[in-house]
Length: 629
Ligand code: WTA
Image 1 (spheres, rainbow, N blue to C red):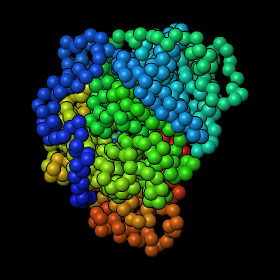
Image 2 (image 1 turned 90 degrees about the vertical axis):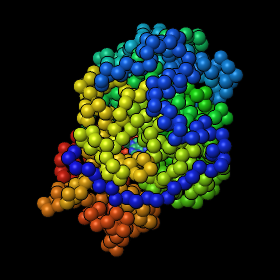
Image 3 (image 1 turned 120 degrees about the horizontal axis):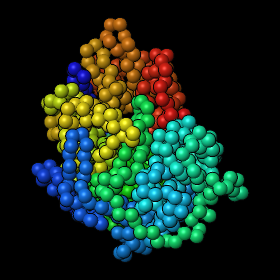
Image 4 (image 1 turned 180 degrees about the vertical axis):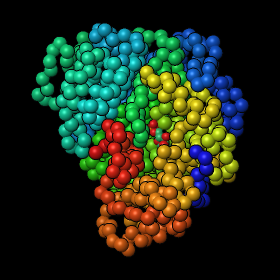
């Protein structure tokens, strides 16, 4: 990138933490805690690591052989031990670990003791199938507790799990099974999506037919009569575990032993198998969950993600369990059976921490503020957002809808980073639309393509300047691809996102570098233009792309979803353009606006601008295995 990115968005609102938020917060003074942490990052991470249990200690905190990192060198540990045994040794053995609610409102409550026993049975059953340390297991399950059990059981014996989101098609699943060379696939007969039955077993049958490494398929049967299974290759989950002992010692593993592979393509390109390891990942997810959400013993923590993507791995399963938290997890969508679904769950279970996505917030906004008003949301204490830049409009709505006094943690991170990187803590003053400042121990900056720090309000690349414990260790079977993250800009980890810092050092993410639009010598991030579009009262969602233009390089085309009850008209289109004009200026006004019923999104809710652009320009769509519809 030769030129910097222009920043047009001006957001001046600031929210100070309330006295109540400050009263008991783990971190009272971010500024001094941060300064101390980056004066000696290795010391900081080692202190955190000592809050967890290790089978044998490290000889060195970090071995940095650019771009390869090893953390807690020489130590042995097991993340599943820290998620379970550490708690069942204490009073927490009878504490609720998981409250699970199905789409049909079936409820299951699992204590730490019960989770420990289920995981151990599953670990023993895995061993019986000949799964050993280092073997890969593909988990293709809907959002049911068995998904968590299977993940932890793999971790317990040192097998490597590869969780594949249960909405993926057979070719996408086959691709991921084959790349990982999985020996075992764990699946279910069906999943549910807005009342529709998804036949997962059929998808697995097709995928496994072309995957010679798969020796066995375990099927969790949720429906009666159960789907027929072809013995001996196919096993029933309950039969598989029934006679197993509830004790299975956790395998002591090198801190650098792989924990999982998670395939990500984000919004661009071919899926890559991001590899995370036991030791560093455990330290990073543990402490971010504790500090970012100010997690306390009596919280009820509700993260709406699916363990099929990284937020589920780090912030439904590992981070919260490492902290001994009570986790609410619910199958299904935010607006099914009604747009009050999540608010209802919050009221029903007294949720105090609620972690969601901008996409979901914008969806709920479309249904209006009367829905949250119907429920008692007073149990809420801390809110979170992840996955995309949250536009100030959605931020304000979320804040208001939940009572107007709960801090929103806009957490920026990636599958590759493993844990939250740029984020407020509840006691940090908030600016709607900004992910604020780096987490403790993380050094971040905004730089040009040569790696030079940019002044305040100049847009450029978001980078991380030093290794951190939860960072990915490699791309599975593709070390060259791993290196590109660290050599695009020398000596920095380049996230591929563009960003600017304001005068207070607050970071404002502006979209993906690949999506930057170049209009008449100006370079614009998609997030600002989209944010200006959705600040119009009639607009629910927006995506923008650049189209080649003879005179100005690129022109902006916007795709818009209108709010319920709004009707398309030339006057409306004009008023939307006027809104962008007022918010950002002439340069950012789209020359074309299409009203559309939906936008192409990844299954985790990110808009795939690349697909919109390819369609618009009549080009090949590339890999669209992660697309939702
Ligand atoms: C985007 C999800 C702005 C970003 C945890 C990043 C965000 C990509 C935010 C990673 C945020 C995530 N503000 N953008 N708070 N959080 N992103 O791998 O573009 O699914 O690079 O990890 O999502 O997506 P991934």
